[in-house]
Length: 265
Image 1 (cartoon, rainbow, N blue to C red):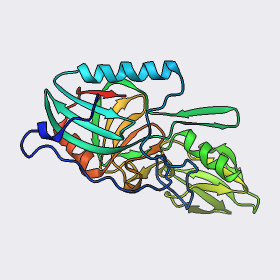
Image 2 (cartoon, helix red, strand yellow; image 1 turned 45 degrees about the vertical axis):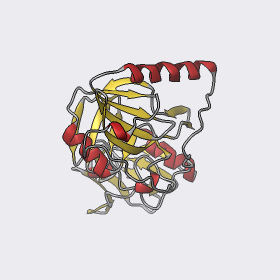
Image 3 (cartoon, rainbow, N blue to C red; image 1 turned 180 degrees about the horizontal axis):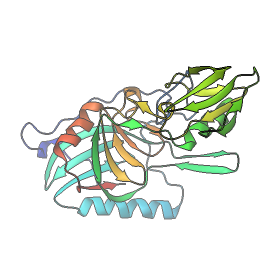
Image 4 (cartoon, one colour; image 1 turned 45 degrees about the horizontal axis):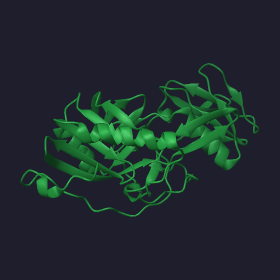
């Protein structure tokens, strides 16, 4: 499917935001001065890993081409998202898609790709908070040469300097004698060559702002969402989600209802 022409847009509705440059980011953005090793990839040539990969692309593209009604279409090669209603193009917006790489760490592997095919918008949320998955901590550990460990409620970790690493309420902190000192919630927890994964539900496992102002869920952890890292838009930069400028994801949030089909090819 070729990119929809803005000439077919409803009066005043279509627009094409400017593409911007790129820099190295994780899907969560950078934290505590840690930079992702994944190189941002410019708009891709149409090359395929295999004949099966090419056939999958053609099938997904054909489904998008033949779709009718209100729908969202994401072209990963073009790094663009289109919203169409019948023959009318309502929005054209640049996006960031997945880096299409695999992370292997400590016997586990994670594949970072944006899956082709048909999905639908399952839910919408404003001011979303990102809860980093385990792959985030494995990626930092692999990159920085750290061990990885999980913190548990009710179980203290004794540090090399004699302090204890503990969870109290919704905060992770250090215990020196009877003095509890909460750790910053916006930094990784690294002591003695180990990065610690905070328990889900703690403030240290919640990052505000990294998904932008809005998110639209496509299921299985895949999202259309905003970003504070506008430099990544137009590149392959994420761990699977489709990332947009905040103004564009806000338009989707306001104009595209839950249940709308989303075609990715």
